[in-house]
Image: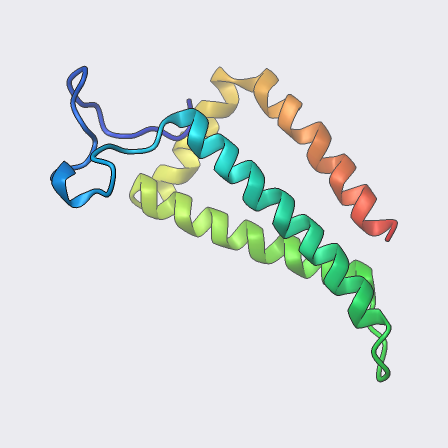
Length: 125
């Protein structure tokens, strides 16, 4: 779905030279998901703590809403840049996103609702 790795024969390693890999194979999908979740948790907790601490520093105050907006914009640009690199360019990325929207519309809704709630939560800080 959406993001895919090149097709390989069953049982083959995705790494051209497994001996260069520490464990000899790519991490499983479950390990990647748990790793991404851990990074996401630490990133979000860190942002909240840093914003709270920085608001207590004397000086010119800033808008937390603008800080959250900039943070989300940077994450969007980085994600799109990485996805364009993975798919082979901006047009291919747009085509892949359109195709995924048509094929997995319910999954996009399931991801979109928490994203909207996250934005609302961050604007309430």
